[in-house]
Amino acid sequence: MTRPSDASARRRTEAYFVASYEVARRLAEGRADEAIAVLRRELDRIGPDADETSRRFLLSQIALCQARSGDAAGAMRTLEQMEDELPRDHETSLMLAEGWLLLAGHGERASHHAADALRLAEEAGEDTPEVVSAIKTLIARALLAEKDLVGAFAAWEASPLPSWRVGADLIDAGFSPDAVRRVLAEALPRIEEQERRAGAEGVCSSDRVRRMIAWIDQGCPSAG
Image (tube, rainbow, N blue to C red; front, side, top):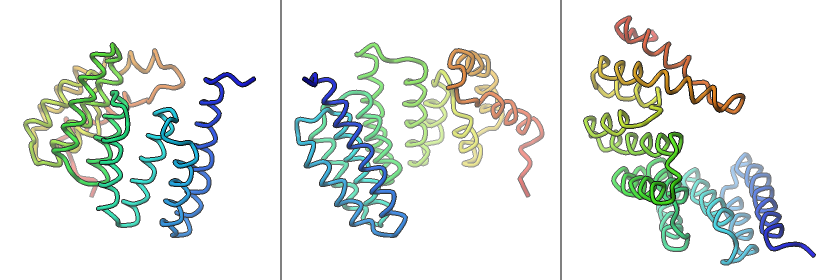
């Protein structure tokens, strides 16, 4: 007999495989409506009692397909469906923040969900440096989208592992390169330590951080 946990994992794996293959093929052929229909069928198949991870994945892919096909209103409706139907944990809140920012361009709503993600991670004892950094990075990006450079810098500076990409975006937006350099230089030892702990799975950003510091020291020359 298949244990419930095994059955749940199997359904999740099937959902991922079906969605990934069929949706990618239809999107590549410019058939976004069909891709969304595949995802909706899979969502109906696993049912409302399926594990949160599967439903979150499928709904997020529906929103992505809608956004890619130019249906911004549809993408927002799907994000609202996720808000209404999914149990809230830091992963769901973080995904909602990403969706509202990247798919709907709604920085304020993204900031709200990112703040929820941070609170929920702390309450669950899951506020690792990696999780907190992902959330702080998203908060910074949301505030950048709202043209709040001071707030974006503060959120980015508070990240245990600040993203060099956000640092570059801050400079591009007109923030002080010296302030960005200070944050990156102070964070570099932590980033290097995180890479050592993660081993082969680590995202090797320390080299990019060093390059960015050198670029700032050279006066931020343009690529051209």
